[in-house]
Image 1 (cartoon, rainbow, N blue to C red):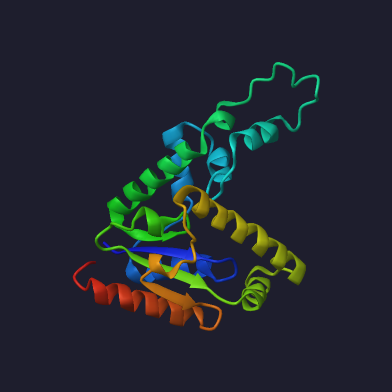
Image 2: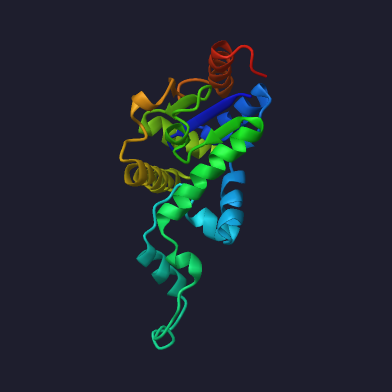
Length: 211
């Protein structure tokens, strides 16, 4: 079974390249399956799990968010929902367990969620980083997601900040550090097809007997 982790900066095409790599290798593209499994294991809603997916939110922020629609009078004696009080570390630990359990079944291509760090000791996993210059990533996001330049820049700032903050907070490292990866690709300068071929060729060459 092939296992590939993809770390992708916003606008680097991870959401397009990931599924294409999975299809070429004949393994699942693992994305929404992770928060769905976390929700089941923790006994929370999928919405709650998605709020913690690749993000770092402190318990106080969650309590205030949960109470935001309430009046100040009603908040007196307010008991926040259980999910607002669960520590972030519990969601992270459950996410790590979900990643390991999911790839153990059929292998897979995992996008984000610090999977390169979670699976760094996995004997056959290959770890890929997709990135590129800011201006090229902005243009790529505008083209593929049909966004205005302002929308693309705002989304890039929010997404890159959230994902970098997640990895720095829980793993004390930089997600862009090349030491975490077997291959670094500037996916803004190559076609999707070229990126997919490079990743799949490297994966198959490293483990030709896997299938």
